Amino acid sequence: MPRSLNSYQLKLLAALLMVIDHVGVVFFPGVEVLRFIGRFSFPLFCWLLVQGEAHTRNFWAYLIRLLIMGIITQPIYNTVLLNGANDQYNILFTLAIGLVCLRIARFNRWLQIPAWIAGAALAQVIPVDYSYYGIAIIALIRYFEPTGLWWTAWLLIHFALVLAEPGWGISQAPAIAAPVFFMLANGERGKRARWFYWFYPGHIAVLFVIQHLIPRVS
Image (tube, rainbow, N blue to C red; front, top):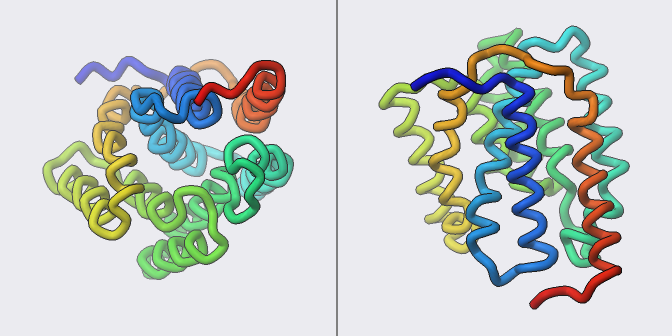
């Protein structure tokens, strides 16, 4: 496949797909096609996290930025996407756990498997958005190769999710096709995207404002 997308373009795509997903959650919960399209966004965020960890000049600044953005986002995340509930932490905390696991796996190969298992358990216990599944696919994306063996592992993770949690697993099934975007990545950074992590709380805030300006569509 032609490798035609740089990291900046993948960030734009991930952000767009996330907005489509969240517009569906907030305003059109009965329109399944919006959620279907949105299922591609999280694997792209994971891909970008893996690339970011591999190329960051300051791991601790990267981790702290994720945690600060997660803390800033949490109140409005609870209000807009969880309908006032407070029983789950947003995706930036998921990515922060994944980032720590990635760093451990990079520098100590003997701790790779224990690190991923511990990360998945922590994601489930806290709990964070996408919980153990989120850490599992970050782990698999870390070792991405467009081979039959890798695709088999990717399919098995999603098949196992359907068996373990049918409702969630079926809704997440479109993500099976997300690695097609990985194969389009050319490894180039492209433009700087300082806005990227601010976009997460920012777009939720915009949805909050719109939600209170127009009636919710049922």
